[in-house]
Picture 1 (cartoon, rainbow, N blue to C red):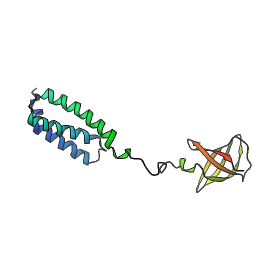
Picture 2: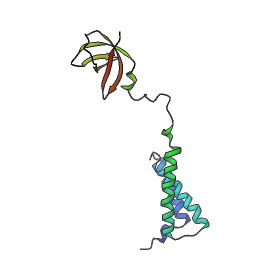
Picture 3: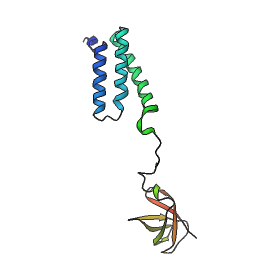
Picture 4: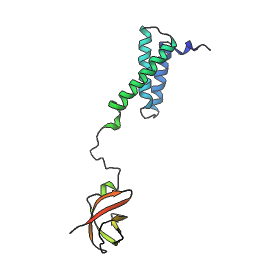
Length: 148
């Protein structure tokens, strides 16, 4: 099988443009770096003719380098958020206060915060109606301390 048809600058241009077109369909950045690597190989092969084995080796190395650079420096989700707890509903409850709607017995009670009922864990027994402050969470269980 002759693989030399899978080489040359126009092959790499076509492959690069195809990968970038697929990236536009929503690959999430995965194909962007590989498409750019293909276009770089195209530019190199315009000036320096190589065999197809060398071209694929250069493409492989450039794909790894471009992918690393993309994920390390250019990935859009790597920016700091002004509100990192935006999608963590439980973490947003830390620091809030609530009244126990069920007493803390054997270390567990219940509170209602907004429209949801939550199980709370507390180190000391507390009666129904006691005010607690949410100090943390594990899973969907809140940890609380009494407010004195």
